[in-house]
Image (cartoon, rainbow, N blue to C red; front, side, top):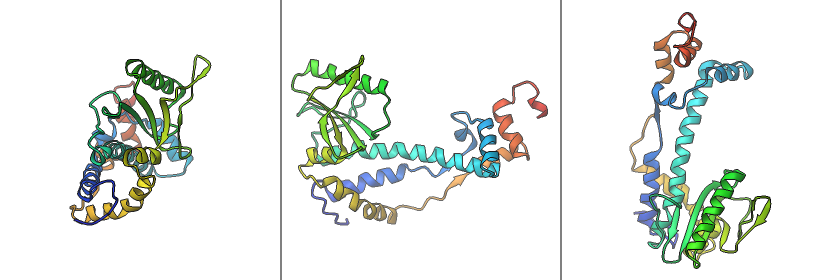
Length: 245
């Protein structure tokens, strides 16, 4: 087992956690998966013409976007689940908050970026945290942001019904400060980021290489040799006139 010497997490645990993320990475996609959220032929046509790109290239870009979105979910899993390997008092419940520490009565909502919540979702999250405080006067609730505007651990201020409200027990915390709270090491997150490339390389050395398998364009061509016609038939084949498109 390689030595990473992070101090706050065992080498084997961080290696296995990283390996679990790498194993989840997506390499293949077919037409059914590609069209799961219903592709928009109109947008693909606009993108192709406006950006002066072949329709096949636009489809490839959309494929990469979908795969990237799937992989982003795995990175969220990485951030959420690492703390239970650092300290057994931290856990990931099946529902409700993303991370909790029942011993310390800490409840965490984890966001990857500071701009992922609109005002409505921020209000709902804040009120859910207020409800926790009503039930448990010793509780603390954290909105933890991986990519925050700054390093911070401060009272979260939210506008409710036009009034700016805050409670010192409801806090907005950047991921570096949360790592410090969990580990007692103010540089814990920095150390993890510095070691992560090496850990991923070590995982990849023992992982069977996976070739990308993308059958989307070939499946489109099975519908019609005309790629433009194929994407319209996929979405509008039951519409009037599209049988003769």
